[in-house]
Structure formats: structure tokens, C-alpha cells
Length: 249
Image (cartoon, rainbow, N blue to C red; front, side, top):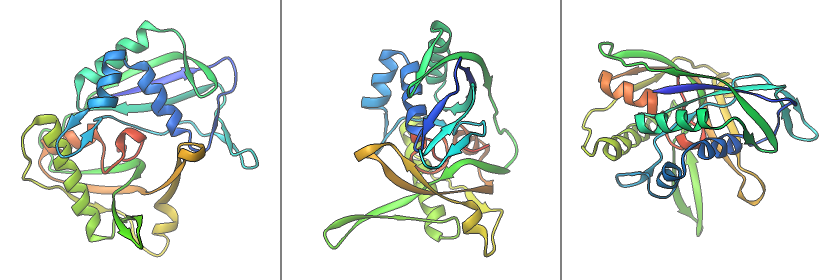
């Protein structure tokens, strides 16, 4: 299930580059204390820990001030959040209706509208999707005594391989059962300008904790078991979903 959440403010909402960290913090603050502690500390586990939620970037266009590296969104922002875990979504709804004001960064905001959306793929084995936030997959290895991260594009064979490993791990963590099936993922774009148009190099976080993540937007075709496609639609595609990557529509 997913929610579209809209907030308004008495003043213009100003956020810095890397603001997705603030959106993530807002989501954690909407969660109840019990759920917040569980998602942050324990999570859903297979070989790795997963928070099993994903969110989009802010949907409104902002005015960007390059010298100050800030975005001015005006007095309204909205974004999506999705999860295959109904209890997480229900907890968010409860947190939204119990409080009348929230904060994102230094901005005080008020809930305006929240809309619940549920989509289940029952029969189609092929769907076209668009990545509203970049899809990110990578491997980390040692080189000259230092950790190095290698990011992969949709045109690398490792992209599909790592996408499916990630799905299997999340599936095991949620359902507590193995997943033997894979999905096919095919980019619906190409050519010389593909990298310039669809590749995104994103700052996440601030100060000493700021780092760069590479991912890809664009349209894709997914083929596979409809139950798996429904799961991917809610859980997010690729890695770092709870940091705002791999949110698809």
C-alpha cells in the first residue's frame, strides 16, 4: 500500500541539497515510538536488515538557489510513501491524524491531505514503470586497502542480477520463505544521451555524513510473477529504499 501525503505551511518551505534525509526523518517522527524503534533497530531480516518502506522525493517543483544550495518549495509539499507491511502504513496514518503539526528541517508544516492507494497486480505478467526516484544497485570491495563502491547502470548485466538478489532478500525478510523466481527488467530507453538524461548523482545527508549515491531514473518494463511485481511496487526497486531510492510508479 502507499500514501500520498500533502503538507502546507504558513511560510515558504526551504530545504537544502540532500533534503531527502529530512523527509526520512519526518517519516520516522510520524511513526509511533514502538514502530520507530523496531524499524530503526530491528527491522525485517534475512541476511540483511530491511526497513521495508520506500518514499518519493517531494513532488512539487522548487526554485533552486545555487549559491546557497537550497530549494524553495513554496507553501506546499507532498510525497509518496509505500510499504508491503500494512502495519507500517496504518501506524503512519494514526500518527498523521493524532498530530496537527510536524517539522521537516527547520520548517513547521501542517497535514493537509492524506490519500491511501492500493494496487495489486493479479493477472499481468508485464508492466511498464517509471522510476520517480533513482534505482540504485552497487557492490563494495577493497582496492588498495580502501573500500570502493561500484555502481551499475541498467545496461550492465550486474544490474538485473543485483536487483533480483535484493528482491529475494527482502522477500525472505518479509515472508520468511525463499523466493526462487526472478523478474526481468528492461530499460525502455537507450542511445548516446541516455546517461546524461537518466543517470542521477545524488547527495544524501549533510556535513561529515554526506555522501554521493549514483542511480538511474527513466522508464522500464518489468516481467514476472504478479505477486512479486506487487511486492516490488510497494517495497521499492533496488537498494536504499528507506533512504528514498527506487520508488516506482
